[in-house]
Length: 152
Length: 338
Image (cartoon, rainbow over all chains, first blue to last red; front, side, top):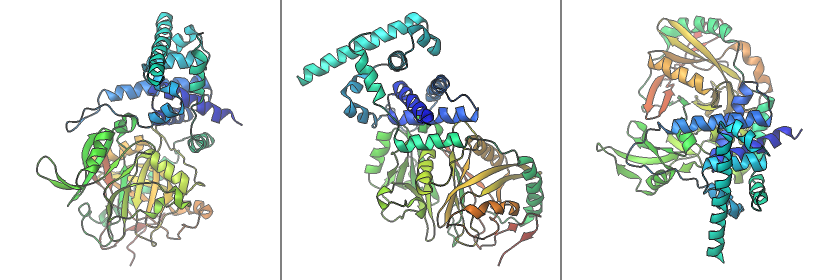
């Protein structure tokens, strides 16, 4: 009976990979999960991940039209992300990556999809995915090296 | 495969949902969201009641008018964009009631709270910043609320598990709280863990409808299904069904969908009236409810006023200040108690 909890955790990790923010990831997961249940969709990882990605894109579109009043134009902060950073230093570097890079790394390394499969799921050319993986790893490595120099 | 890949994989796999959230989402799978198919029946009944009740519906007092019985119902439409972007809404209190100060980032909203409680806004309005409402877990910040009290709705069984809540307004007998969806779900799931948090419809999931009702005599029960009838001058426009997700000593929370909430707002903005209807035929569902159950038969009708506050729309259901509730039974027979 652990399928659904495991599935939810997988969805949450993917949502964190997309948003870089545990709280927003939780919201995103819930939104996708509710949509999946409402549509009586298959409760499997591919469906859930696709729903999460779709909701994430929707959220991005909404971001384009958010009314900003007064004179505040700061980027929203993600205080809960600090929890990730504290939990694992590597996360500090992961959060420096672009969402597309984190997403590609997650799907490839955690979900085990090939570059071609990642490309199919993210509607990107395979070469773009390979590039995202390469650049993501390179940036992460650079970041970690710099961090170690600071510490060491 | 690089030497970094296993570390990346481990980092991702170290992330997991909180057990509480995981359990809540899993519970949704046991009770998937669904739309009521009884609306046709409800429509017919509510049409009978609504049309018959029309002349007797008390006129609505001004929002937040001084009243010995300030019962009101608020449909809270969470600031959708804010919920998903981390922006928040700050609210302030004027003489006429709460108003939204606009949408800010969290840091700006936090700054607002740290500023002196009384401040002058553009236009010369002097307000007291009450608090900030956010859309994400753990981000409800209490404002300078030293003279306010927390509604019993959120008093958890474990006193150590209390949660800060945003207090919109208080009177001698009522406290109005404003909760974004997730916090309402969290609070209700925490306090009333035996209540399934069903989501009626809508991709966005649950939105809280906070109802304040007169104490004791016209109580509704947790788990009860009530109907919201939208009545326009030509007759009943539509009815919606909602479940009472939780109750406190003087408040209750209904679950409706965002889509339905938008219907309410749209209908009322076009001149319609929203009324709450409880059908006696459904009282049998109350038998399984908890200690907060009351034996009152009907929920009073109310007349709605739409208050637009920036990105948030609210529907208020002020009742007759004199307490002349209009009740209706299943046959549409109307009474004015006491």
